[in-house]
Length: 119
Image (cartoon, rainbow, N blue to C red):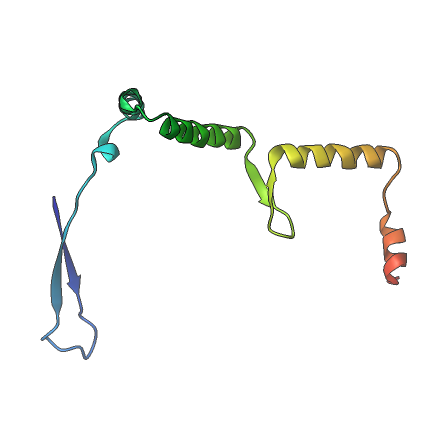
């Protein structure tokens, strides 16, 4: 498949010698871009059935296992040092902080302003 793109240059003072240019791009599509998710899964299954190398299968398994675990506990942000914060970690911290507030472990705005020396 080819894509023809015309580029016009009709700016004031540009002259007529460079009024337009045509650029032709060759566009290729891969087979996987045209396949449905079900077709891709079926093809992956066929590929895996042909693999005899157990170490390669272990690598694929590890990669898929890591992906599935990350989807179940996604990264929802980053801490001040740039470390990823997962949803489960944030929930645990929130629950601990909430329990502390319920026990009266918090600082009021007035107390905080006193600590800073702002009044």
